[in-house]
Image 1 (tube, rainbow, N blue to C red):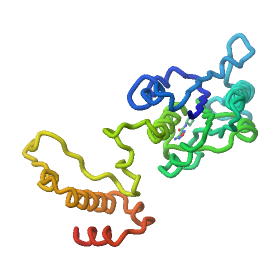
Image 2 (image 1 turned 45 degrees about the vertical axis):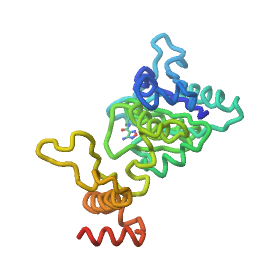
Image 3 (image 1 turned 180 degrees about the horizontal axis):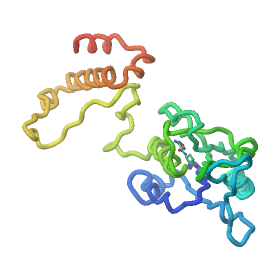
Image 4 (image 1 turned 180 degrees about the vertical axis):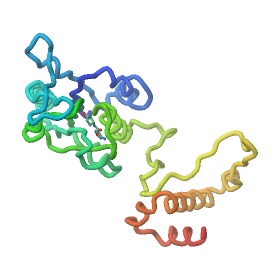
Length: 245
Ligand SMILES: Nc1nonc1C(=O)N[C@@H]1CC[C@H](O)C1
């Protein structure tokens, strides 16, 4: 069971994972354990202060090192008590962009501590002393690291063995074969004057497989040529792509 600790000023936000869908079911099935800690519990002052003005001036506030460090140390200790050394990850625009490969790496880890920040970010000394790596979910600035942490956790949890029934298999997702997903159709056979492609109604599984692969290749070439550029094509894929021209 994957041990996940999250440090956040808004732990209630993580209900989006624990109360809904696949991530909720996976938790109920014991595929992972999620412990949420609010660094405010580690403040000493009457106002439970977690931030302060930046040295050097400038706008915004910086999260104090002391409460965060204490929260991270306790989270690490809970995981280490189970004989596991956790990876400590800070969600930040400065981090390495999240990819499917990274998700597949992280899902193999037995324990994670995710540090989420608000305000301008965290005191650098927390990063220097306690954080193993930083991950970004994209080149834009959000109000907090909670949504990035939930994006990361959702992507990881659905890859855990047993998280998905056959009905929602992860094997067929985009990026699994390095390509974008093929188009999907379900009832009715005609909608808004548009018919479902005949091949999908043919029951000819090999033809359907080839059609789907060709669609993935064409969509990837059109929308994400960068993905194709770094992905060698099989002989079949090269033929299907050429036939599509
Ligand atoms: N993009 C991202 N990928 O991971 N995290 C972010 C992100 O925008 N974080 C915010 C920056 C300041 C605030 O503290 C939280």
